[in-house]
Length: 106
Image 1 (tube, rainbow, N blue to C red):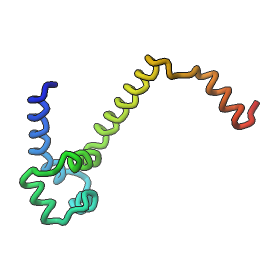
Image 2: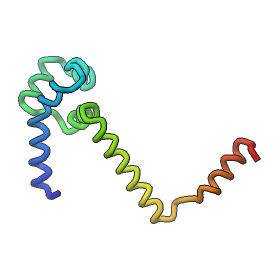
Image 3: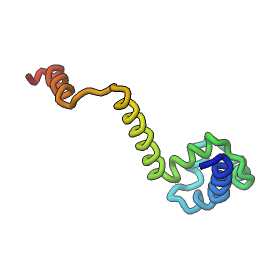
């Protein structure tokens, strides 16, 4: 995805954020507390689409939990792949043996 596409996608997300919040299982009070904002300021940010990227990340984590979990899982898988490429791994049998030794099961 190129930079222009990312900008347009972010704009689309900001445009539907108010609708998604309204249609979510959470009350607005939940998001007010989550962001530590007063009601008037929250609605102004929502109306003017002026949430910071950090605020959008925090809201998104709660609005779209499945997508957030998928993203986290993908990050962990990528880290694991990189560690395998770098040789930073151990055989299951070796880990099992260490665990048994640690807990006195041998």
